[in-house]
Length: 265
Image (cartoon, rainbow, N blue to C red; front, side, top):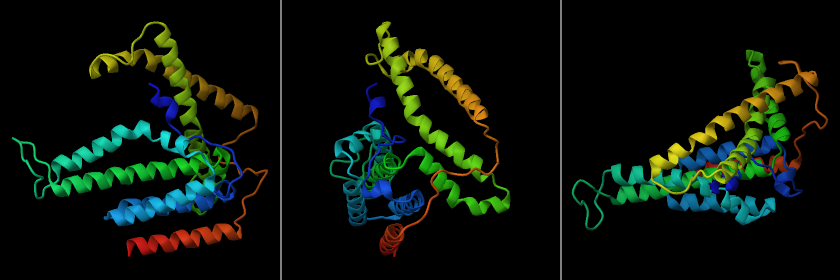
């Protein structure tokens, strides 16, 4: 269960790097453009160019490379499952020594499986990089500013941005709570590592009940804290630091947009 400690998606690492200082709206738009491009590309060359953009952003973030990549290990099952689906179910010319019985692996399936697995890998890395360099409060404020025009359509913009911030903020909190419960249950003799898949799944039951109890307790405490601070749903709120796009934000957006157009054209 050590993988729970490795997940970095949703966590924030304070810093003063170029990426930390960018406006959250710039990061939101850039991430959206890069994510769309990631799943539109069809060649390994385009994937390599996108990876170069990620590594450039990683250098500008001044974050520990090992820390960022360690957070992706928990999603290894997702990469393997996606690759396997394409590996075994994509038609095309068979690899040498295949088919073996009813099992057939094709060149097209192997290429598609590796490409899709790397696309997911890159998408999670990009998402993690944004949350690691943007505080939950900035994410909420930036999202609220981005979707503010929807308020004319009676969309509860403030509530939506608040829920998004809370969801992102609760990811590392719940992971930490689950890890604490696992350690407590292990101290009581529950074995989470040995046995087959079904036995390990059954051993997860002692985790779920206290975890759900903790989730509802934290949600109740949060509701009380919001009421104590005078929070009213839908009411316009002011911010201590108002967001303002700077020259570097526009240059980053122009660069990302130009890169995306080059990739998809």
